[in-house]
Picture 1 (tube, rainbow, N blue to C red):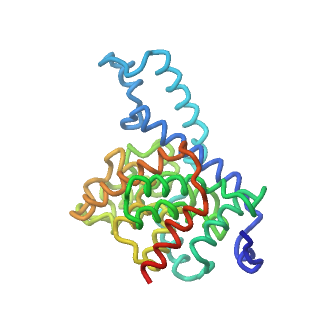
Picture 2: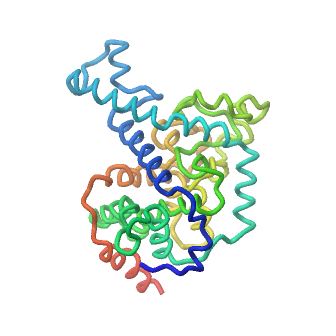
Length: 316
């Protein structure tokens, strides 16, 4: 897995890849536990049952309390990050980020080279023999292959985290690379995780951006919505312009961190007819994105042959 010195020089190798991966893991843990605890409007079913005395706990009380404590601890670990993200993701910043994206070519490489580069930048302990830092993507892709999903979906699972390379280009920090995504240019919905931290965002009380629909029209379609800039949005724009992947794949890449929409049900008023099928595709994808993390690690060369190389030869 030797990568040229020229290609390495295109990246900021001084950036702390471990910090990126640690934060990503903490964010994933919160989202996994939210699904496990059935979090509704930022409150767990355990809280709802405890406060209102409705229904019987799904598990015994002690287990519920322990899970709830672990969830609270996980939320606390990412609170400062989300405060920074929520305060800095403004309309002005997002317009500039998209303009910067269109005005420069950062690097040119194959998908496999990009996977190797991301792994090397995150984990420099043994870059020649290990792909440990991108194992979740391999697991997701292999799980999709095992379940008989089309190869375009397997490839989507493999590449969906590649946008994190943005951190090693010119990202301003971690806040414009990872984290749950949300629309800018309209009111921040209460179902966004750590919603209370938006108060420091200049757009929060803006005369237009702070209104329910803001700069958008109901039914305009999610394609028209400007989502907070990060690795999902970055990769979506790369793939949209440089691949023949279907619309479902583009939606999986763009929206898989858009938890307020696909999990909490926020911003549904902006959907058009196409978005209904896109939403189902994203939900199907996220099952693998969240739950494949504990599966066994697939053989790297098998994934390379079955998902990357073979489809390439078959579609020349």
